[in-house]
Image (cartoon, rainbow, N blue to C red; front, side, top):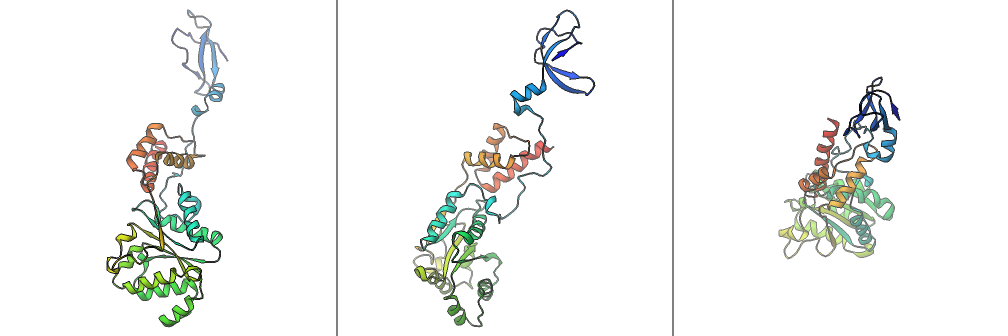
Length: 292
């Protein structure tokens, strides 16, 4: 492009050209017509610069932060980086085994449990998925009443409940399984649950549980071993690797017009320790800098 005004001196190549009418940069200086007078010169239009360097285009930041914390995720599509764990889970379940997700707080055991609940409708169609958060259970009576209601069982006595349950095929997903250590969840109740889940193809219940500690460390009042030992395959959730964090960030930033720098991504990786909930919090903070 030609421009007619201004004296371009040595060293000004690459300087911005200002369109006085619009008040915006319209190009980049390339060469002068005369170093000694205001004859103007030639420059590279911004449309050419953006074509060669698309990352330099003005970025439009969306109003909503894509790293907003949502708590426990109920949509399987929102559970990121756990494809291997989900595949293993249904391999175990379809082979007749039960599963335990083990991981510290923040690793997403509850979200993974909810994802399995939704996906079981298609991948384990012969069993009805029932999700129970044991933190919400008040006592043993509430436990049986909640389970019976979710399973559609009409029973007035424990004996009737047992008889009706034998006719069911349930995938029971227990969140916060540590709560089974409560005084009203005595060892007999836990072993009964084990028996229901450990009858092979005739099992009325198949289990998927979520715990923050290995099952062998729970239920010390059960005697020699955990009531779930040897029937639940433990899947230990690990923190995300740097590559997983990078992929997560790229997925969430798609369509926002924002790209985190390598330094920002390193900050997120190092400060979060790979804990998904911490990754989300640090990404939220970095994105807010762009909004500001």
